[in-house]
Length: 488
Image (cartoon, rainbow, N blue to C red):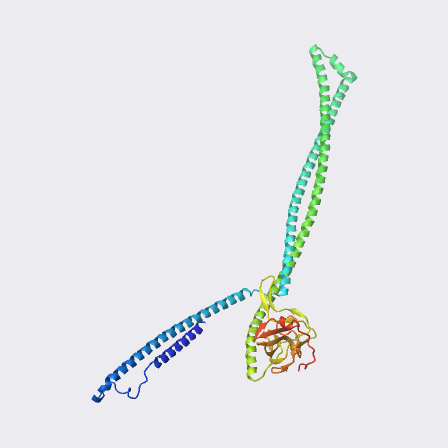
């Protein structure tokens, strides 16, 4: 931009200098041959009468010359100011254009994340669904693990209670056995005492023991001894009998407690087993869904890479489409200079018999918000033949990296607009540059060359080289009659 401004500045300055020189030159007096004489020469005496008149004319000439110089200087100043104003206006236009180009470039850069690849959209949806499934599986696993910990704690507590109940019951059993032993021993002691007394004195042993007393005191002591021995033995046996009854009651209660603890322990073990199975199921589900997420992530990454590659292709197509506009304009001008004239009718037939699969215009990516402009209308395969939409002259046929096998037909000026049509992705081209074609003439075979995801006809309408929506041209268009020349 700076170089363009400098060139314009130099051109305007040169123009101003040229105007200034011309104006100054136009104001100078036209010197006669006598005027070219030496001004310092002394006039002759015979010319003294004319000297005064000559001097007055010279002064007038000098005054007029001065006025013309002043006017020329004024005009030069005005021209210089006009040139400066023009330069400032040009600079402002250049700056505005630069700002607009920068904005367009920023918009392009902002849009270069990806484009509307169907695979990327599908992969993104599948990845999102798998991630949602994984979140559910992980929630179930977390819940199952919490329940498993609680079940393990309950199982451990039930086992502890059961162990305590068993120990308590075992102790009561041992205590009861001890009491039974002591009761048996008491009975044995009393039996032995009675046996000794019987062996010593027979059946009258106790009576003889009393009658053999030599004094009242001895008698009282012996009677008291006999009573205390009998009472003590009977009391011990009675106490042991009470202890045995209490221990048997306690043993019955402890047995009931143990059975309850066993049932609780069994229930806790069953709950632990059920929760353990649930935890294993949740863990397996997490592993399976995690594998699905990994696979979907890989598919999404692959789709993104494909989208980036497709984006690169789109940029190539945009670049080549822009360059193609200039070429169409230049080739049409060259053809006109050569005397070739195209006579299109302005009324189209359909360039293909297939239905519209993709219309002209911008398309917004549903995930990445990237806008991709489709510069034409895509038609399905139909009968597989591409037809000239209108009469004209073949302007260009070539293989293009983006458009594949491509044909451009010039239709001349229609309604004041220079119209050309473009037919892309052909598998075979049946015409050559310079060939005249009739409306509806077969010109090629539909294919999938260039940047194409499948066989179709990409059809463009170009006005002065720039793509225009083909829809208005195709709305009422009829099918080609196929009665014209077949492609060579």
